[in-house]
Image (cartoon, rainbow, N blue to C red):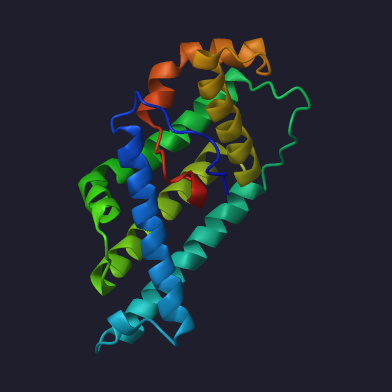
Length: 201
């Protein structure tokens, strides 16, 4: 999971505050799901179709796990110098682009969730479904691009570290990474999803 310590940037399509709010909104939704499960089951799905919904979710989770296994079959060793290669950055951005497509479709919904002071069962259900949709898109993209979750996390860390270093004139970022950041800056910023890194997106 990518740590939320990597700061969002101001140039993305949403402002910093909005993106943090969105992330907090989803955090509340996930907390709601965990609470419901701890209390004995997904009560908001307790209808005549509850069994079908559980089977659907179980199948979706299995598919995500299968795709993650495929992705993680690609071995990755973190470079000691932290330098990222251009071809791997391009693949990273290809993954981000596909996940961002889902994120963008639900952006208004996410924004609304992030601004709500209190969530209900409908919010929890929608948030849970959306997170699964995002995770599935990411797992499929990682498998297709031949990139493990470890490599994805490494690249995300380096991208955010470089993004922060650029305006702050930090010297602890490899010059090669700075050059790549400048070359792909538009795409890096376009596909940023600040507030969602804590779930590995």
